Length: 348
Length: 185
Image (cartoon, rainbow over all chains, first blue to last red; front, side):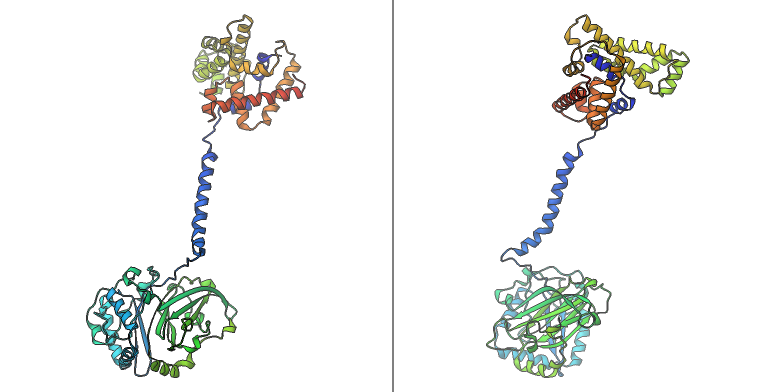
């Protein structure tokens, strides 16, 4: 046998082999190009998913709490009932400076300011509400002067505004004549640059949020909770507003808890009210003034819990605090201390 | 026109059968023949010989796959011509590369092969080819059945020419070992 004979033998190969070879269809080597591309895509996805976590775990890098600025005017009525209204307003540099000045002011000034606020009657407040509501968002106060009620101290760490915050926009209420004067336009959010916080402001109030799990002691339901710490540099009065998911369809009165005394200091504060208001949860409190307190002493921790299945933990915490005289605090303590609803720590 | 219609023309002894066949498969047949003989003139004569053979064979022959049948006729004609040329010791430049490559693994022996040996060799080669991956099988058949050139194979299989050469070289060596193992070489 030789090559020609062998080739003649090949001539009789089966038709299926010969015909199949006649029309080979070999496209581009897909794997050669698609595999590296797919690998690169996977690496990018993993990097995108892991990097934020790694970033927060780096020493000295902490995830900023989602807080935007809120200006609050706390007004007390003759019955010592606190009405707190939150709003988003532009905090100009001047206002911030005024707040800082006020915070650094004498106790006498603070007492006078608070006393003036106490004299505002409930009726006047109602009228003020109506008048201010008509001003809508453009009805910011013309000026927050030395005669204004307790000044607002802001700590803005995140300019991002929750998508539903526009619902919560309420005109600022100031229990003085100045509030009727048209003021600057209220923006929908306040950025850190706008508030221009000074180191002093930054130390006034801080919020720390820690996700945690808990079980409802009564129903054994699993809850997603958020522990919210509020630190003050001095005796303060303020509020915390927790914005949950406004579209969440659940019975907030049943499924929302505020659990205090996580820090062990809350019993010294006065929790004056905590309730859902349309789309946010307001916590209003006062805190005593102690001259020899450490910063940790002025610490309040809240635990807000929601059923886990509601998945509404992506809430937005906003808050403010302002100095309050010891005399006013004592009065509030006497009237409201017993009504503070919280679970003992051992129950969660 | 499909193969069955062409066969019908052959059966009707219509000369149109030749023209249609050439029109439909002439290029492919010439390519195969040229790959074996290495000459366009020889390829043309091979095609004419194949057409004449088909004209004489159909009827009574009624091939199931007319295309493969015609190509086999062309291959045989081309191999006969190649053999004749080699016998006449014509220039080696006219010999086809594919047959030279096969000569590397097939020892030069007698042209006469018994029908039994022929059948066994065909069965062994068929089994060997069926054991190959589809791409390697197609590559082997394209080169040693259709006598395709390397540049054509490179484009068809989207491989570099060097890659084609290396692959075919390995396939030849594997075939040689396989035939030796079967006692056919």
